[in-house]
Length: 223
Image (tube, rainbow, N blue to C red; front, side, top):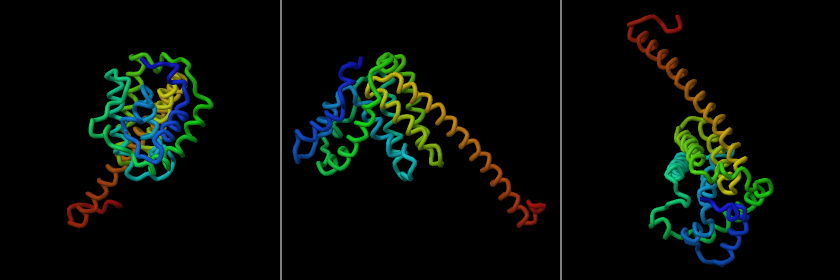
């Protein structure tokens, strides 16, 4: 079970200490995972959801990040409290230049979220039943991100970002907010898919009618 006191310690401070401790050296993935401890799920969910959750073009992000979100959601449902990564990934090192440029900017985001997040209604983030329930929706949002159709990526990714934030700080209120956003995002995705399917049928029917008209097998589709 998540240690609420650990969850409340500012992650921005941990990241800053980690950067300073390695100096100009590359940072092993294993060291990063150890530093964020059992807050890893929330932290990684935020990292992979943020690029697609922003209202700007992010071609190529949604599918691989959606797969990662599905994998993390499955691990949460299975009862894990620390993210699992294959050994070859844990042994990899993150170039210091990348860490400096990426995490230094991310620290600002973390500090901003730390202003209004704190452990409250923490049973929603620590109880396995609740974690599994929310994780199911995290997986559904990740699945939506795999669909190459506009409007099925941004809202689901943002809801995952908010739920990751709730997990990170053991904040059940934020987790519940992320869940509500996932319901809205799911409604948007289903609606978009329905209208896309319906429009596709209409276009397909018109094309078939036009081909039949060209071949002399039927009337003009516009008649």
